[in-house]
Image 1 (cartoon, rainbow, N blue to C red):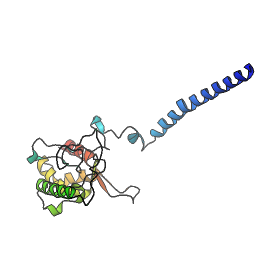
Image 2 (cartoon, one colour):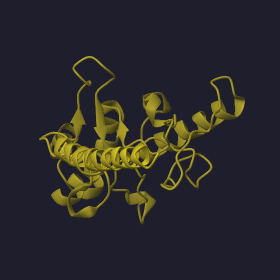
Image 3 (cartoon, one colour):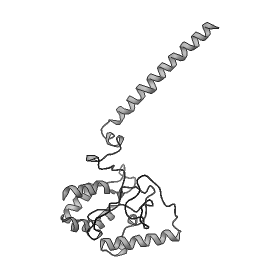
Length: 202
């Protein structure tokens, strides 16, 4: 009886020791090492931007001190934004969509109001406003917009910041990513990174 108990206890302690080494030391070190592979290290740390100015994975719509002289590129609308239209800064502690469908009359009205507000801000016809400018993302914190929406905003940003339009367009191109793996999704512009580039170029 005691011999069996000692044998089982010794076996249990050996298993505990082995699993502690494997799960508590080897596995975490392996994951840490994989996270340091070039190309993965930035994402592993949360994609923090230089100077700790935020994460390139989170888009927050900036608010200009003077709406008539707005120097920023803007993100897609967000269901977590304080404004009724979903334009303006989102609540980064909350991620979610409005859950309204395409046949919801309230959503259709909101989209038309957003289109009119953005057209007025960019001094263009409402028909020139691209779809992603008036529809919220599922997370509400999407940092990416379409190249068409960035191109729509570029003349205003150039005018307000005093930067040449071709320089602003170069900054947009620098913040643009192509399709994932060359065929998934659509080209996209990271607004968070783009606004920092505009700030540094002024």
